[in-house]
Image 1 (cartoon, rainbow, N blue to C red):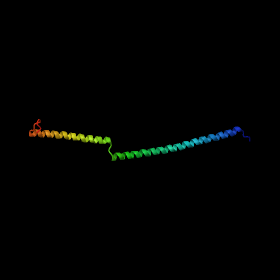
Image 2 (cartoon, helix red, strand yellow):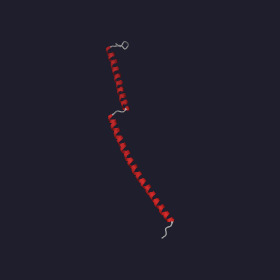
Image 3 (cartoon, one colour):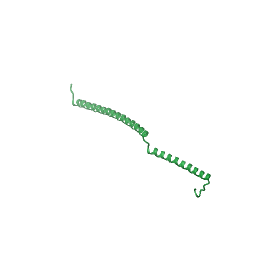
Image 4 (tube, helix red, strand yellow):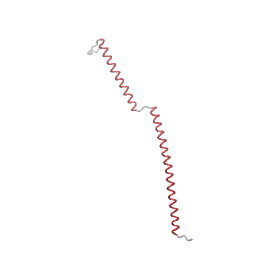
Length: 103
């Protein structure tokens, strides 16, 4: 049984290629596990942010909501002012007050 240099070289080359292929496969498997863990962490963080955002909107009023509420109150005050002005003018007409002297 004679083993020449080409056979030894082919055996070493095959073993090296097998080790390299196994390393790449192992590295890809570890990378996939890490990616999966990161995706789960991202989902958890998104859920936490969503929960806190919901709690935040229950506890606090946003600036836009505050502005809308203030504008609604001011609109109601304007309506009440118009009604009171009309009542004042009607009472003035009933008691005979002239519009020029205002008494």
